[in-house]
Length: 153
Image (cartoon, rainbow, N blue to C red):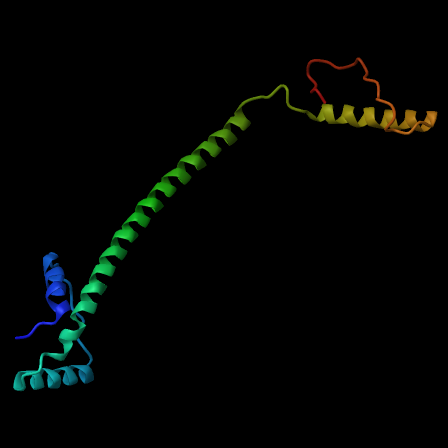
């Protein structure tokens, strides 16, 4: 029996792994007959079995599939980490939202603040129109009617 230079190392590599019982897919009937004929010719003659030439390629495919499986496991771990982070961050945002509903912010603007600011702007515009001065040259004067319940607008 003659061995190819790649056949012995590929055989050692493929047999070193533990074999798991996996279901095998049968070949199609047309392919099965052609393989049987080639196997019969190798048994009758002294030529090596023709499918032995594919052994290194299948060993390389097996190694690549093992690498793919390892990479997919790393992707699965990354997915689980991102899912945990997303869930935790969503909980944090939900907590902030609930805090905004439950806590009163006295410094925050209220509708009265917006109404006063609008009145102040209208009064300043009317004053500028009455005196004939352009709006950008003079700072509007602040009125002293601010109380503690309004904002710092």
